[in-house]
Length: 231
Image 1: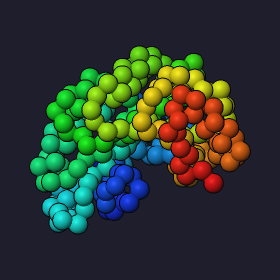
Image 2 (image 1 turned 90 degrees about the horizontal axis):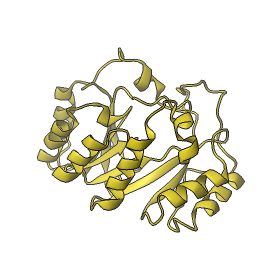
Image 3 (image 1 turned 90 degrees about the vertical axis):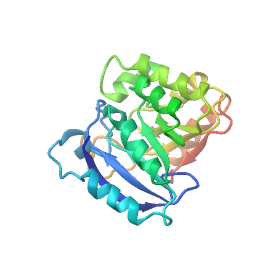
């Protein structure tokens, strides 16, 4: 597994924890609005060695509570459970970000208790899912991952990045019917990182008014839904 970078401290990525964030390289999705396109498309990026990563974790024992693992797509890598075991052996809690495309690997991690918190992207309504994700044939796997999280005991959240050109309030009503009753759901504001897969002029953040309309559309099914990072 290739690690693509490390954010040494975050108060935002892992709810309730002072954490670091480690990025894995590679992704099976091609979301055109992806803000980490270099991690998705550039396998020759400078690599953070696992030795350096674990040396960092050993030095931060007692200072950090957790490790957030994001990408790319972490579950693209079959050896992810081994990495999580090593992190937990040092006393850290683990938050795992995923796009939901690898339900068998997710199930293995959940059953083994290797993740303390999971954040899964819900890219769009079922009808627009594969266009939004940039690949075909992935919806059944995503649906299975939703079932695993909602039927399990590991704390989790679902989240959708709201992109003006890709989402409408009716899409969020459809998402709400799909994940009705979930305990944590966030509509996130799109941010142009300068590293957008489709280019910085292609996609834009929705207006605050549209974001609120999307929130109201999902709340009949997901009353706990909140906006995150929407100005």
